[in-house]
Length: 202
Image (cartoon, rainbow, N blue to C red; front, side):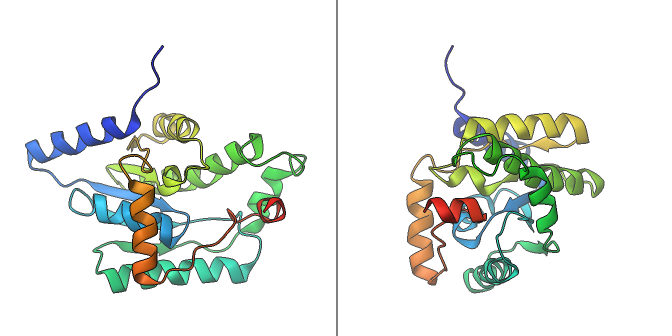
């Protein structure tokens, strides 16, 4: 059985919306400014985007504040038309989810549950506020499992009655372009995902 090409699925949706002459609304969960840079550049002409910064996995409030401030700066300096929603720092949600999984290596079950924790918050907000689509920037990272991310997105879409936009943003030089944009705007590029466990592994 062939693996799905989520990037091609996304491009097909963009072409169909363009053919119909529609610009749907998109709630885009964002993990950090660098990961959002290319995604915003690519999707801004196709959607009315609201950025949703919810990352309770951050190990400190200082890290959380630094990343959300960089996101706001990028939007302003790059002139992206995106609105920005910054959720309250909520480390207890991540700590409760990660109990018993602290010793698991990066890329395992703890990460899968972390994807779902953050994406669920976005899907819930998108459903409650009438967005056409939701998705996340997480798939731009070569260290993140795009298949997991899209499976979670489709599960949550069914649960909350909101369409999930398929993604594998690292494809077609997406990750490379995010690095270029990060350099162009002097963005803070953290060397760990966010949680204390990922920091320790690095």
